[in-house]
Length: 268
Image 1: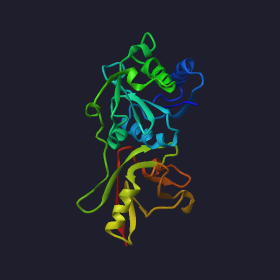
Image 2: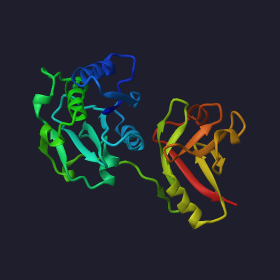
Image 3: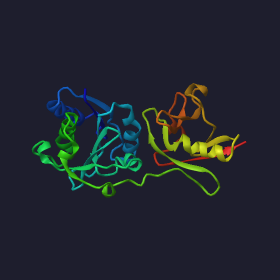
Image 4: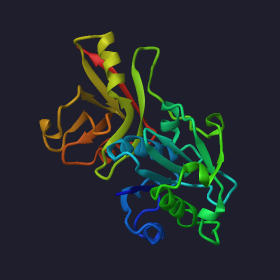
């Protein structure tokens, strides 16, 4: 069974996602369509990059992953497709696949310009329906990527300057909030390897996580390890540091937003 995943900023209030699925199923009625999320914040390419990077590996090889976060839809921006570890990715060439591109040496990348695989006509505002949906359906039926367009070099792809954690002059690990989930949890760009660098530098000391004007002492093993209503820091399912409130909303509790800084140091 072939699988197509969808990651978009379309939301689910309008008909856009349903129409994309209708186009896909019209071409390949046997394909399974899985929604990773349609609630990427509008036009947030960094959030989209982390979402697909953290999700794709949990699907079977051969899955086609479609990412449509496309603030310049209708312009002359390219649409690209490539394969990594037997997963196929289809997205605008706008940086939404940056984390995948940075981690891998991709030998075969195609600019999707073979219009015979598009719907006709192609609208100026809904390439999700007219290009991404039919192209992904053809990919799910085994059409080789190279038949869909012309080759493009990896060095010519657009990549985002995604902020990375760093150590300040006073030894603090400085990261940032990259997304806020449905529960109000603050998901940062700090991963377990980053935290282990602190432990290796000053072994035996506890971490102090600074969020806004508040501090959290060390990591918690799970949500229930703290009293209801109290904040905690935990390594989430993505492998990144998350700031949460047990039974509450961390974004409201700390009064912070995406892009705000999280600082980590050590205490006795």
